Image (cartoon, rainbow, N blue to C red; front, side):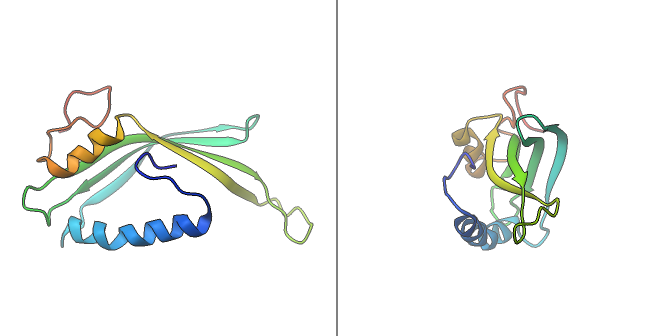
Length: 129
């Protein structure tokens, strides 16, 4: 799950995302400057998962100190073949996912209370630009 919260089930996931949307939209301000970039994707058929590496960026311009969330992370999605009424229709269902960031969650959250460029986005870097 997300490094900043834990939950089980699709309903709880939908509820968590729904609770975050108005907060994120407010913090982004009128300009709504945000982006998620897929950096890499791999498929491990033997173990039944897809792993992505991504960069999530959001400029929180509604806040007077103008923080910038800039986190690089990885998400693994474990999947299995789905069935509909006992018939295998070739669909794939994600049954579990795990997310990790390349910096500790506390350091990522510290980006919320510091001006843009103060906190690195990855342990591989010194400072975000």
